[in-house]
Length: 176
Image 1 (cartoon, one colour):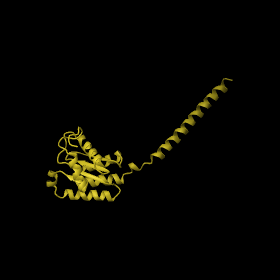
Image 2 (cartoon, helix red, strand yellow):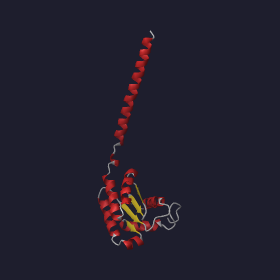
Image 3 (cartoon, one colour):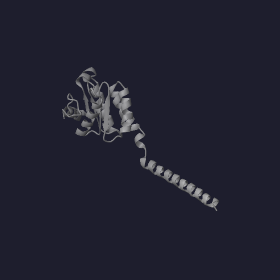
Image 4 (cartoon, helix red, strand yellow):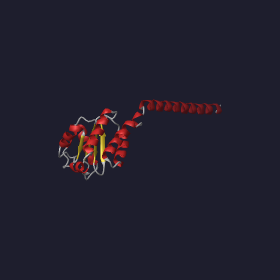
């Protein structure tokens, strides 16, 4: 997948996907040497997410931020498309991106904000997962909201129609 117009040339999606498929985690070599415990901690976070309500997650930690931070979302989306993970997180020293087949964008953005605000990568990943699984944003019953909106609209239209009928009736009576 290297060379895709949306993916920076120095990113090899096939290699990243292969690393992710081993243990759900890929940590860049510089980051791994700087934080030797990080991969182990992230594997634990990924296992906990899978065992809980979050679902499967692939966690990618790049050594450097691409020139365009929007590339992180493109990388995450390509990995989501080419692996079996339900959610993919791509984090770099200056930014990050999260994409998912099962979680809403609104919930992910809440979690992503907390993840990026946490300098400890493993704690940030854990914060993301907790935010997503504990969020009430996805729990809104949109069917009930729609039905209630339609009921309110119907009542409003009936009140307006009755008011106009009353005004016409009053005008007719006063013209007699």
